[in-house]
Amino acid sequence: MYTKICSYLSKLSLIIAIIFLQLVILCVIWQVFGRYVLNNTPTWAETLAMLLVLFVTAFGVAVGVRESSHVGLESFLILLPERIRIKFELLVYFLVGVFGAFMVYGGWRWASVKWNIKKPMLPITDGIDYIPLIISGILIILFSIEHIIANLKGQIVKSSWN
Image (cartoon, rainbow, N blue to C red; front, side, top):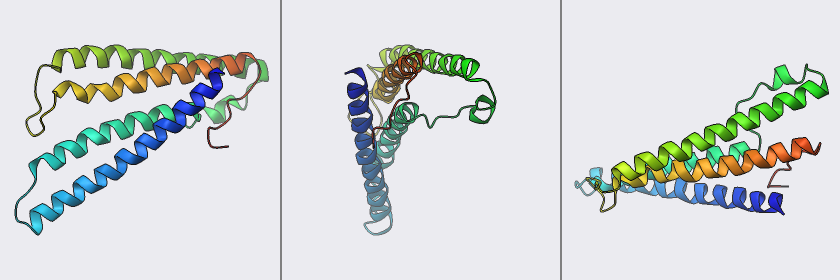
């Protein structure tokens, strides 16, 4: 059941990242069109595009953890005996989960500090910049736990796209 939930969250995260990436492209197109065709640069477009890039990156990183496509020491680990390799994999996912926890903690602190400050070009709070960090951190923790459980059971987390 936990794996199904993580698989669903991974798919949903990737879909959201794809939609937001398309919105980034539209913002940039609109900004270029406004600047060179209308001779009136929409100042909000760049700010919105940068905010959307934060979400795209955060969701993409979380999906990368679930799909095991994050930076690892694969070439080193395959040389080790199975017993030791599994322990190193557990350590890696534990450390990735700890990193996710730091993301949540730091993101929450920064969002709290910046929540009452408004963005100059958009009618939203400046604290929203840190929401992707919090969401991604939570997802990374969940996906790391999934990998740890799978390793302890001698299983592999299957890709969400199979």
